[in-house]
Image (spheres, rainbow, N blue to C red):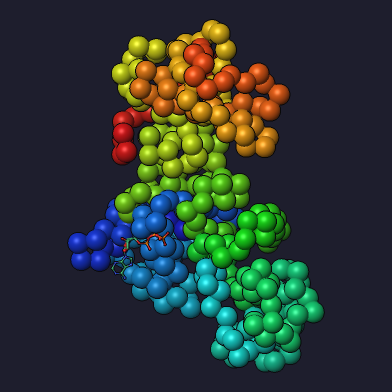
Length: 330
Ligand code: ATP
C-alpha cells in the first residue's frame, strides 16, 4: 500500500516554483530520502505532507486518503524538526507527552506512553531533566520520542541530524535506521547530505529546482545516475563528455563512471596525465587530466601509485561506464 502519493503537485510562491509538478509514491514501511541542494524544494515537499503548506496544484494522498483539506493534526503524521523545537520550561517527560496532553489523555496513560517512547530512543531515566541539561544528541532523541509517542503512521524528518557532530551523526544514522525497521513506520527523511541519504534510505529522490530528477535505490542513484546533475551531486563521479563517449562507445551521450572503478596502468582506454595525489586513509585519490577532461580515480592503499606528472593509461570494465541522457547540468 502507498503511504504517501503526490500526483503532479506544485507549490509556487509568486514566481518561485518551490515544488514544481512533483509526482512520487512512497510505500508503507519505506525509508524514503529526499536529497538535493539547498533551495531545491525538499522541505516544502515535507511541509506539504505534514499539512503546513497547501499545494498550488495537484493531489496529495496519505494512505489513499486525499488530505488537501485535512489540518496537520488529523493526518496521522508527525515531524522531527532540525532545531528540535523542544519546550525549554518542560522536562523531558512532559515534552514527550505534550501531544497526548493536548489530546486530553490522562496523566498516567500519557506518562506510560512517554516512558515507552523514551525507552525506544534509549533515554529511559532522563524523564525529569530539562532540555538545557541534555547534550545535543540527547535533545535530538527527545524530539524523536516526542514525534513517536502518538504512534504516527508516517514520520517526517527534516535534516534531524544536521546539528550533530560527525561521529554522533553516524551513530544516530544507524540507530534511526534500526528504529525504523523495528517500528515499521514509514520514514520520509530530508537531507542535503548524499552519504546520509545513501546509507539510510531504501529509496532516494534527488531534487533540483523544485523537481525530482531521479528516484531509485541508493545503488541506482550511485552507480546508475540518469543525468550528469545526479552523478555530480551524489558523490564525486566522473562525467565523460558526449564527444569523448562517442569515440569510446560509439554513442554521443555523456557517461558517468565512479572513481573507484577506474583502473590505472600502462594499458587503458584513454591516456591521462596525473595532476595530483591525496592520501585519504583507506584509499589514495588520484587527479587526472585526459586531454582536457578532469578525472578522479580512487586507488586502494596497497595498489601501486603513480607520481604527479606521470602519463598513465586509464581503463575500466565496460559495465562500469554508465551512459546518461544530457539532462539538467550537462
Ligand atoms: P534547504 O536544504 O536549504 O532547507 P530545500 O531544498 O528544503 O532547502 P525549500 O525550503 O523547500 O528548499 O525551498 C525551495 C524554494 O522555495 C527556495 O527557493 C525557497 O526560498 C522558496 N520558499 C520556501 N518557502 C517559501 C515561502 N514561504 N515564501 C517564499 N518562498 C519560499
